[in-house]
Amino acid sequence: MESMGNNSPGPEIRALARNIRMSAHKARRVINQIRGRSYGQALMILELMPYGACYPIPKLIHSAAANANHNMGLNKANLLVGRVEVNEGVVLKRIQPRAQGRGYPIQKPTCHITIVSEEISISNDPIMSIESRKKGYVWRRK
Picture 1 (cartoon, rainbow, N blue to C red):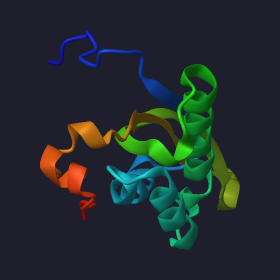
Picture 2: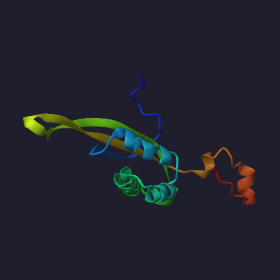
Picture 3: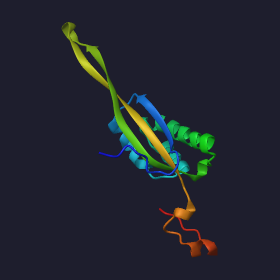
Picture 4: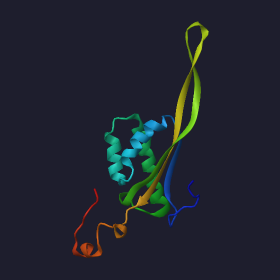
């Protein structure tokens, strides 16, 4: 079991959406594509994906960026989609009327999505050394 303490040095930048009316499995399929991407790249990927789960997730990414800008004064261009969690929520139980007075159960799943953003810092980049930054070379991770 994980420890309840937070390992990051400062407060985390997060946004939480609860009781989203979609399956957690379908939301995870989309979330796995944007984990570890930059803010702009994640929004571009979500805009081009043809899934229904792509509609509430950009709102959540915008919310996390707005929280970072308002609460910590960070620039949206320097944000990275860090930890992302999709947890199952409550299941709404409904009845579908059928023939001869019967009723079949319908389960409508919900999920909770949590996005924790991180700030991109060039000084912590292990790929770029100090000498290469002084010379003006810029290398980017793929």
